[in-house]
Image (cartoon, rainbow over all chains, first blue to last red; front, top):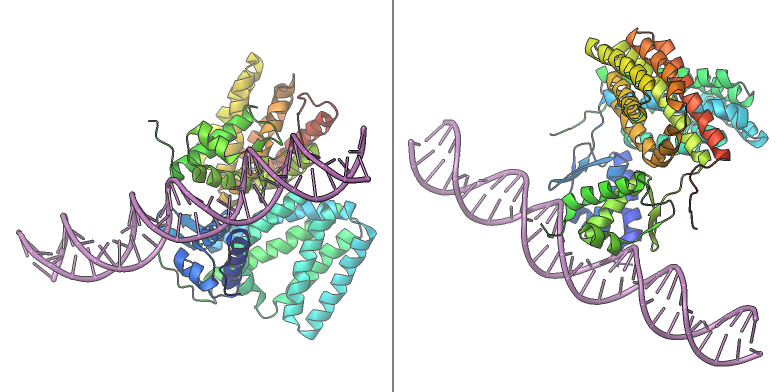
Length: 226
Length: 226
DNA sequence: GTCAACCTTCTTGTCAACAATCTGGTTGAT
DNA sequence: ATCAACCAGATTGTTGACAAGAAGGTTGAC
């Protein structure tokens, strides 16, 4: 058990560990990621760490500059907005396709999620709502059959963890987005493609609005060093 | 000069060389890429080749399966269509933004490209047209200021080289797409965002149509081995 | 003739030592 | 006090040898 994690296993493990440290706030943007340190603290070899960092760089979570090592990539509010704009474009596509292509089971599950979301908001269960939110977006993409879009969206979400974190905690946010989510669900489950696209667009337009207003009041003081 | 290409330099060089071999048809989908062979034929070290393959895998041009090596990824017509659908979503976004954000110089260059495209079609200059086409799409994205979308589009285009090749050579194709390109140019240069989005959507809808009909008659017999 | 177990060969994965480079601080001159 | 050159420590990059695993062919039993 004290064995060093080697290659393939270590690579995945280290990447996952770093992703987790990042989303839980243990790592801040701009922070250096020294290969030796990571290797030691995760009990992996340096090769494994190196490859994990390459993977994370491909996901744009980490930035590698030659001969100077890797650091956590800082995402500006402006970039977060651009990312959300792209998400909007792709999710509109998926919502549209899902409205025409979703199976009966998928439509049922959508409505089910809608009901549970309503309940979660009523109960003030923020975390539950967040999980349902994630499942909803996932299910829409799945029902659309757009494998390519799914990959693109995954890549877009990588660098956003930090922001999602900040937005979800705003008081009153779940109640606000609930209506939008229910609109998306209704449109897709009802098979109305254009309404689905419109609903998805409206939802993400609102997220962008939230991001804009968060530019003024950075709830988390971000210790970015150059 | 007979030195082996090492790391950073070799990595880029080898990746570029493979990309080129692929677009020129020297490599067919499904073909195995053996690290040693590549290293020898490009005069690079195996490490450099390995890293280059990782990069290409991130671009989804190549597929790496653990312990079995890398092979050229085969893109099905269905996937090509999905890719184009995503491109459509993102390019609509860019066209829209470009219509409102483009500088005066960019609008002028757009019109210039339009004029040259018209000329190229009149002259039957297929290759010139193809270059202009590329420059047009590039300029639209540039004018949109959507750096994130640009990266996404680059990634989408990676695996498409093979198909672009097949479609561009169809007789009458340039004349057909000319009108669509001119419509995009007019809308953006004229600052009409919704018209720009519509024009981009129409263009890519047509590309999808072309892909669909190419499913029936594969002009290039693709020697895919499992 | 067919099939399964084996064995050889080819290929990828791993590692640890070594080399090259960068960073930050120290020294000495002006 | 300021600045440049320099030096030491830290960190990344590279290499070649070795280990582990897969693919395909061969042998032998039935």
